[in-house]
Image (cartoon, rainbow, N blue to C red; front, side, top):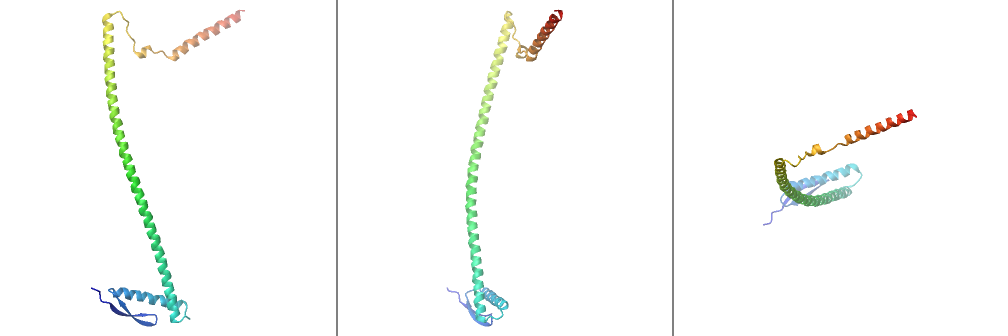
Length: 184
């Protein structure tokens, strides 16, 4: 069913008009009041204008304001579209980074398990070597003929000790040369 059109009387400028409104009568009254205020503002700024010229200038101002609002709306929609595009790009990047994170986490778990396996193999090898070393040392003690193997620390020689011996022999050579030259 069509809604019944309502007729209202409004004053715009110096004239009274009869307007029809669909449902919202108050909205139509507000629009008429705004038009009246715009015409009155133009009339105050240019007191010599007749009613028709003031109405036309008010209409031009209203259309200019409408164009400004349309342009601002267009820019706002454009900004919104750019923001939505950026949002989609960020979502895609987030998804890619999540996949990369889970892949790295999977790799980390794999390498941790691999380290555990190698650590257990190293421990097995160390215990095998220790047991073989213990068996060898028992067998050498029981035979008695073989000499005892020194631990690694006792078998190492220090460079400092070698250097000290060299300096002592050089000092002795220097003293001998000095004595020979003094006796001559």
